Length: 202
Image (cartoon, rainbow, N blue to C red):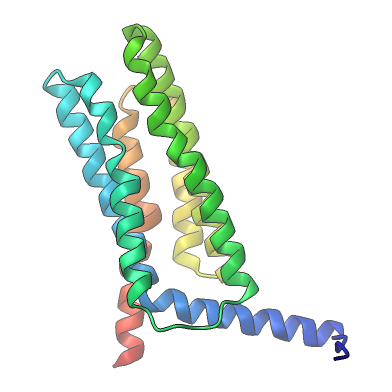
């Protein structure tokens, strides 16, 4: 079968159509996925703070595993309930972004757990450096998703969270900045997405 060559105008129209389709998919369940990851990260961070405050700093490192376990489990459950749809190049591109970020993020708790055999100063330094680095990577993923989908709340929330992630290097209370980062980058855009989806149904 002979392939049809598209001119520049047709190519732009095809890309715009794929973006619109991906935006519609994002509105149907996308907000819930962001809320799952946002609230899970927020809750787990609060648990870590509580464990450290109670004197269980080494045990608290294991709590970070709850984020990928609950996050991926919740995401799978949401996607499983979605009706089957054709996957566009835009969908696959965003998927590749988050698969890569997910693999990197999975290494984060492994490194933190490995610090249990190190001295307190070493553990503090590694935690102080790794949390801002991981935060920046996650925020880049959110921002790129927003830019590709042309969804302004994700773009604004992602860039705001990037600024916050760099701010972690200048405060000893970086874990609280980490929690705020998820509020602006995932929880707020997630609620906006869900509200938009409800309005489109009414």
